[in-house]
Length: 469
Ligand code: ATP
Image (cartoon, rainbow, N blue to C red):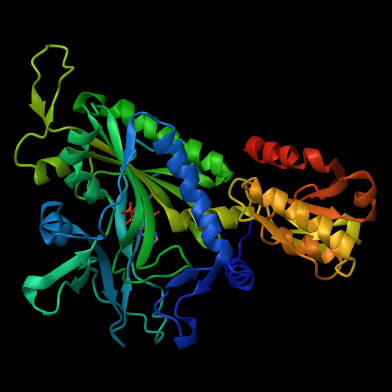
């Protein structure tokens, strides 16, 4: 675990995980582009999520909806009126900032007691206060205006005329697409309560102060589930999703001791929520929201559907009554997941085998690692070694393993290069291989080396990945 964000940003740029957006033109307001390794890591996270919550469950189906929706959606959902953050203005240079929000702790409760892992803080009443920056990062000014609310919806025009009638918004959350498609999904899948609709996709917010690398950007990705239930079962399903979020964090391989559940008190929750828990992670720049869980009641379906949208065919009374289902919403930020995974995996270590030389190693869950293995011919100028190594490289690839190839420099340097990007196994083909059909497999975390028969190599790697975490 690292306490310095700059090191992660620099590794990401150096090795092709994440680049500054529009870099050759001086960048654009904290936008970022995922590079060749970053897109693999991000896709592995999204695939793991989709498999766990959609494909492996009978009660959840997926959709993939348009980013720009009819503005009436945002009127009904309350976003045009309510979706805002507190903004303060420097009195000297008039630069604008998002006021930090902080809760005042209840009297007699320490921060560590309040943040005890997985203990919900129900029962405490917290007061939210707005804190302007200590000084203006732009001019050093120390006086700020009172906080006022600033709407975060990102606006554009659809069609050739830039006029009021053509104003539309990029979606600020994926959730509303699940609500407006509720009847469509119901009619085409014959699902009955409880069931969920899931989606992975981009969302846009005109954040006042984007920053902290990919933590807060104006364009980001979410993985969300709207889980439809009967009102009297909401507490049970809220608990279910609370556990599932923690299970997911464990599955990623993130240290759960660095995750804290924060109960959001009355009056401070989003306009639609009757109960909210934020799952905060100890990022290198402080403890901040990673995921959220909200009980959205029937707020959204009630606002979108004028007619009762659900008929209960299994009702115990046999009366088939119609009603508005209630909703539990677990929500995961994809980019914040990438950042938490990288922060947790980043280690600087001494390598005893190399007389204390230090190495940077990303101890990624092998399921998430961009490459599962790297293949090295011991020497690049020995055709018989290169040919054998190529054969093994192809064999791994045709068995659906993402593999890297490296034949530059000495083996020690190649190991370090793969450690830095989190490749769990390095496979070296040497002269002995030509005699005994075995290779040297070196483990990223233990740095131990083992001779493995080529015929057992795929099993060795795939079973290690399957067993990981
Ligand atoms: P914050 O308080 O940090 O602004 P939020 O409470 O507004 O977050 P939600 O509306 O609950 O966030 O959004 C769901 C999830 O989407 C968050 O838990 C987070 O992982 C992600 N997310 C929200 N805003 C951003 C952003 N600007 N950049 C990257 N990810 C974001």
